[in-house]
Every structure is written in structure tokens, then in C-alpha cells.
Image (tube, rainbow, N blue to C red; front, side, top):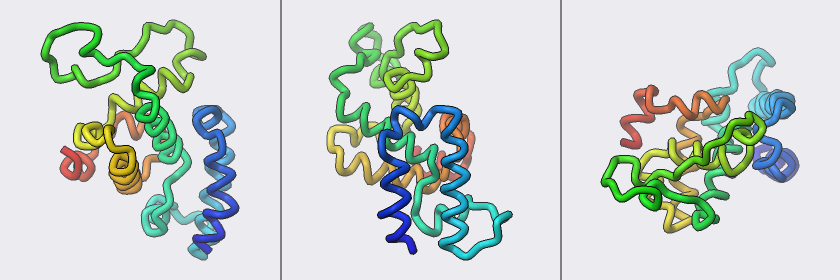
Length: 169
């Protein structure tokens, strides 16, 4: 059943996810993904999918979106400006990417800006692997699978979750 999920559902969900994963319609896709997970595990339709995603080692839609955006940023890192390029001060955020000043919400929901936010919230140990895409992706998938983030807000506040903090600090 898991192989069927990856061949039919996952491939459709991940197609172009960096462009539509932050839209309002993504909630409907997420509901369908949870329904498929419940069918695979033969669970009741009111069962929480948080642990089911972890058991099956499948990323929830928002976690998959975060993975895709982070991979886009790492593969195109030369298109982004780091804080160390802006100033020469030795701060703890010198390796973070510098976000552009944007006023419009529509611009702030774009791939470039969201990519910077996602990359900057990554644990330092994962950011350090960005030079090797294979290890970066593996480590990021493990982190996202452990966190099983349902929303972008959950991901942006991951430092308050004790288990993840001890696992990747």
C-alpha cells in the first residue's frame, strides 16, 4: 500500500509544490492525503494522522513543502544573499540568508521569501550540510519526519518543541 501511495499520490502531490504548497487550496489536498494515510493503515476516519505519518515514514503536505523549498534554496544558494555579504560583523546569524524588504503579503508568500524564512529556521547542523545535497536532504527529511509539521507556523516555532531541540541542537 505504501508503494502505491508513492507511485500514485505522492508524485501528484509533489509536482510543482513549491508554487502551490502555500496556497489556501493546499488544505484540501492535505485532507485527501490524510484520508489516504488512514486507508493505508486501515484506521478510523477520526484517528489522528500525526503518528501514522511517522510510522509510514511519509511527510505531511506542509513538511513536504518545506523539504521542497529548502532543497530549492540549497540548489540555488548563489541566488540568495547571506548576512555575511551585507555586513562584516561576526554575529550568530552571519550564515543566515538576508531577507529582502517586502511590503506586500503576496510577495512575502512567494518562493524566494518563504525559502529564506525556511532556510533560516533550519537547525544549524542541517544548514552545515548544505554543501552536500545528498546528506542535507537525508538529514532534513529525518528532521521533518520526526517533527511531522502540519503547518508552517509549527515549523517556524520548532525550537519550542523539546524533542526536536535536543535532537538537533
